[in-house]
Length: 147
Image (cartoon, rainbow, N blue to C red; front, top):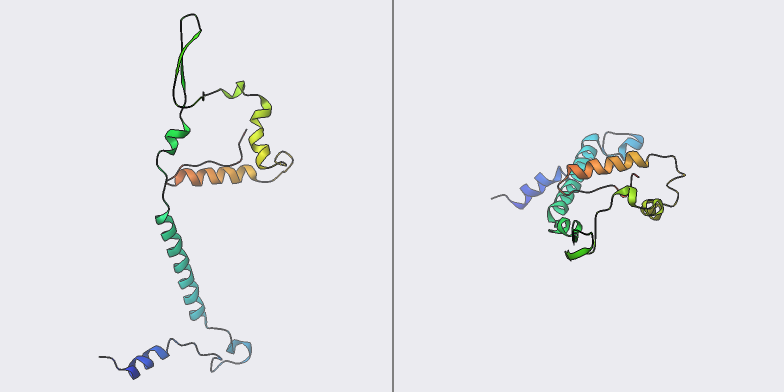
């Protein structure tokens, strides 16, 4: 069994000594490189651990992709008149050339009014976010539309 005196002696070497003996000037008050490196390593480990725990505890919703891709089906008679509609939502895929140009630009304009006038790296930033999102477990896309 370790006595209290032995424990105090063992823990004394971990206690910081400030000002440091054997140093002069401002170096007396600056921690050694070993202590600084150790504290930095501990901080990085704690942050990585917290981020890992947060990542592991984040629930990924199930069934969202099925909802996002829902469409209704329209069945027509031979003469072209509508026979029936099936499906839970009133949504059809529309080719982009059939969408009015003002509607095409509505989403980027709502997110950033000056997106046409700014000459910066939005395109590269968007591509970086898309590649990062597609390499992770959950699919995603950039918020700025590429059209």
